Structure formats: C-alpha cells, structure tokens
Image (cartoon, rainbow, N blue to C red; front, side, top):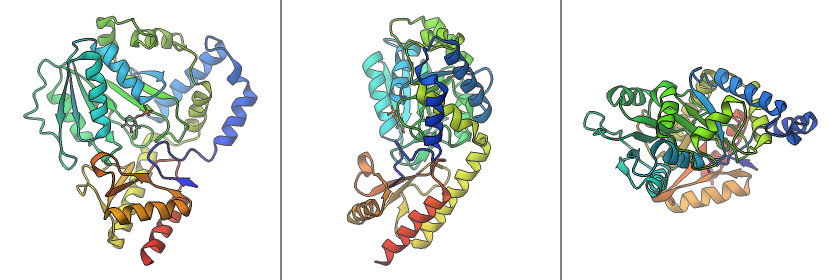
Amino acid sequence: MISFYPGPSKVWDTLPRYMQEAWESGILSVNHRSPQFAQLWQELVNTLHQKLEIPENYTILPASSATECWEIIAQSLLGPGGNSLHLYNGAFGEKWFEYTNKLTGAAHRFAFQPDELPDLASLQTGGYQLLALTHNETSNGTALPDSFMHQLRMQHAAPLIAADATSSMGGVALPWGAADVWFASVQKCFGLPAGLALMVCSPRAVAAAEELGERNHYNSLLFMLDNARKHQTTHTPNVLNLYLLQRSLAERHTQAAVHRELVARQRQWLEFLRLQDHFEPLINNPVLQSTTILCLQGVPNEVSSLKAEALAQGFYLGNGYGPWKNDTFRIANFPAITTQEIEQLQGFFTHWLEH
Ligand SMILES: *Cc1c(COP(=O)(O)O)cnc(C)c1O
C-alpha cells in the first residue's frame, strides 16, 4: 500500500537501511547525556540549518509532537493571562486556539474563510503578545503565501509571531524571518514515523521566554534552551527518529530544490485534474493553494467510492476534515512520495473514471 494520507504519510523508501545503520552504530543504546548523543544532536542541528536554510541565529529544539509545541508556546511564551490572537481558517488552527485558551484563558480568535486572506490593514493586534498562524492548514489544503507572512511581520511588528508549519516544513522553503517560532512534527513532509517534532525559535522568542521566566514544566522552553546549549535534551528523546532525520536530510537536496520539485508536481496534479474535469480543488485561488496538500472536492458518494476503490487497489487517500468531511478528500504531495507513485495513482484515477 502507498499512503498518500497527509500525515502520517509515506515514509522514505531508504528507512530500512537507515534503521539498520542506527542499530549497528550503537546510538540507540547511548545515554542522552553522553558525548555520542551530543554529537548526533549537533550534527542534526547543522544539517537542519544547512538543508532547510534556517538562519544561524534561530535556535532549533526537539519536541515530541506539534501538539506539544502548541502547549510549550502557551505555557512558556504566554503564561496565564498571556494574550494571543489566533488567525485561522481550518481545524488545526482552531484546535491550537482552544488548547491555548485552556492554558492562558486569554486566547482570541480571528477566523477567516479558506478562500481569502485576512485583511492586514484592518487587523487589530495592539496589546497581543503573540499572533498564532497555521502556515499550511492540513485540513483544507490552504497555505499562507510568503508575501502575506512578510507583510504581517512588517505591519504588526510588536507581537511575537508563531507559525504551525507541521505540513510544510521539510517540503517548502519557509520565510523564516517572518516568524519567531516555527514548528512541525516529522510524520508529514519529513517522511518519518511520528513521535518527534522540531521547534525553531528566533532570538526574540528566546528573549521573550527569558523575560517570562517560566520554569514549572519538564518541557518549559527555558529548560529546553538550557539543555540545547549543552547539545542535550530535557528528557530521553526519540533517538531513533533523530538519527533517521539526520540521515534522511543529509542525503537530500536543499530546501529550495525540494520546494521547486513539489511545486512542479502540484502543477502537474492540478493540470491532470483539470483535464479529467471531475474533482475540483476545494480552493481555486492559486495564491492560497497549499503546495504540499491537495484538497479535492466532489459529490460525496463519488468521493467515498473513489477512496474505497483506491484503498482496494493499494492507494491510501486522505479523508476530508471537519466541514469538508464528506465532499472532499486529500492527497499528500510530500517529498518521500515518488513521481512514479504519483503516476500510479493517476493511472488509477483515469481507470476509475472510465468505469
Ligand atoms: C498534523 C498536524 C498537527 C498535529 O501534529 P501532531 O504531531 O499529531 O501533534 C498540528 N498542526 C498541523 C497543521 C498538522 O497538520
């Protein structure tokens, strides 16, 4: 079976080799305070800076999931009563808002439609400590364009900006400087098993954490930062996944090249679907369409029969989400999926439509 589910998704074909290497190297049995672990972590940080083109002055930290990152931001950058404004158009952004509000009691929402961008000129951000955005909304296949991220940063310079890039980091080039905190888990664009996430913090975010001084949790951002300076972690981390991340990134092209390839594939998908004239992208405006997630709309009973037939043929497609549960399905356009696998899936689509 080939998983086109937008996370967890297909993992790299090279994973068996990397896993064998991890076992043979002995890294899986070492203590996370050992020099061997520190070396792995240091190598991984260097590789991430290099391959993902992360600015040198941004700090990279390991976490367990994107959901944990939501919580870390709420507890260590906001705290009880810390004001945040959550701009979202879909289910993941909404969940982030809800969890934050439970911890801070001071989260506010700015919900917008998936086929539009928030009007920045009329956006009131005065008094907010943090703006929370979902860079790539996995639930409906939309993304925030770089131009929007840069304008937001320029026009609303006071609050910290945090961006959930769970289904875009590792796939598309991110406008790092436009946000203070970026985070993602690895079971989407990184093509790895779940259980590891990355948090990338600007110097401003680090300074804000120091100012708040929150040290009440095992995963308080200040503890994570203290440990990272020693190339260590707060608790025993997912060493296997860290190893797999290092190995898979080291063999990859840099982000710009990966991004170009995904854009070309997404265009090819959209052209293929346009010619078939059967399923339409949920969002037609190319400015808002995600490069990494295709969200396609159709008649509900056709969508369900397509998904079932695809599964029977060995292609796992993503269900619709939230309000689009029944009339959409999703296809991941993640780097670990090969062009040949996409051709196979498109062959299935053609065949399905003929019958
Ligand atoms: C998948 C996803 C999450 C949740 O990731 P976990 O690793 O399960 O916590 C959060 N945000 C977005 C945008 C996602 O796509």
